[in-house]
Image (cartoon, rainbow, N blue to C red):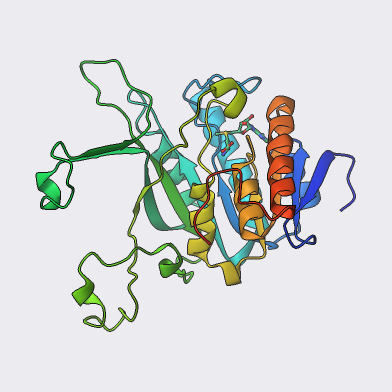
Length: 303
Ligand SMILES: C[S@@+](CC[C@H](N)C(=O)[O-])C[C@H]1O[C@@H](n2cnc3c(N)ncnc32)[C@H](O)[C@@H]1O
């Protein structure tokens, strides 16, 4: 890899698999460092253009310019993606701008097939009666974290989208890699496909943020996803069909951390030096823990 861009490479537990993070605009990074059709999985979350306070990026550009930018990076991302690759695109909106995720999806619709729409559920409340009294908690269950909306017309926004785009719409997935056990064990063996106590999870993924004590120290970025989200996406694509993962909008490096946990080669780009430095120090701590045989420092799925 020859380039004048500032970058750093870390290694997975095996000492060989590389996690590379680059301080650069993703457009320059993808065109100069990534070979066409070399990436198997892209998991990413671009800025949503809903006025998030990033340390340098302006998240309030006019809509047409924003959608042109989406179109440009998606063209490059498509070029980088292998013919059977997956692009998992995380997008959220806000109550006063609920269409933006779908407008972004619509731009990419002209380039790729929308194979799945996954709902990332950040918080949920389940009434006692609605699950047939299966929880001993009489008040039901409320789990997860969200940013409350102070309004008499909007309800709290507790979910975001993960649009799964592929080039053909026919990419086989490893559904059971993120499967869940059957509630009713008599289903095992009843259906032809049910040979083990695992079924497809469906498209509602409850992935809470980790509880933190100090936002500035532990999550110094206004718009991250939990490590578990890219881990699940990569596993759903299929670990044995995935060599290289890319995230054009690295942020704090949560997709990189997922790759470190899963032992997958990674390249990611971040144009803001503050987030780039934070991502490097998080990856470095996780790399040291992994090399010392310690469990991941960041939330992770069971292997
Ligand atoms: C929604 S955040 C991604 C957060 C990331 N998924 C995480 O969990 O930390 C979008 C990031 O993209 C960065 N960014 C915006 N435009 C960029 C560009 N053209 N190239 C590279 N990074 C960019 C912003 O600085 C911001 O950190």
